[in-house]
Image (cartoon, rainbow, N blue to C red):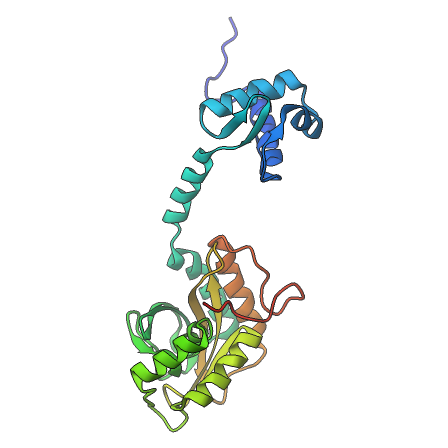
Length: 273
């Protein structure tokens, strides 16, 4: 008697899975419930076949049936999606793209997040060959207005929040290039909103310049900044496109669906809260 290997999926099982995915793609294409007749027409499946598979998906809560004969995606998918989202790590998503960006530029690449009135460095990619005397340690902090990433976060704030930040901190400087006046800071933030890029022109450390692009989550919220640091006389403007592409790659890994800055589809403005 011929035996069947139980570990090998049968062709009918694969076919059922393919049909299930096709049905769910059709349901995902519309916000409102779709009738069985339309589902059958759009998938090419016989109504009885579509009904049988949809019924099984309904039992598992992957599909809802708000009324007889109509279907929409179910809440179980949202529950699973939230589990996946909760397990996504910004640092995990960023590390390999950061290393590739460092390989291309041979300069330190920093991943930073906002905490109150400061940014905190949460990951970095660098080597001794970069020639940088100052490399920010993971866990290090710096004022928002003196850093490229910090300016991205301030640019995402409205004018009232920026003024409150200036009043609260006093805009202290650390070098002769530091921006310590609100009006000058507002001009700098306007540039960041227009281009999606912010810069540090030896404002935190003399001899060090930086450029930063934002990283966004699946809700379009600015969650981090990716920056390149370099000796002031070696910062190369050709790195900008690579920086933006890498930031967008990381954002996409976090579920961001928007266009990258620098593309025709992108809106050249940061979201303002």
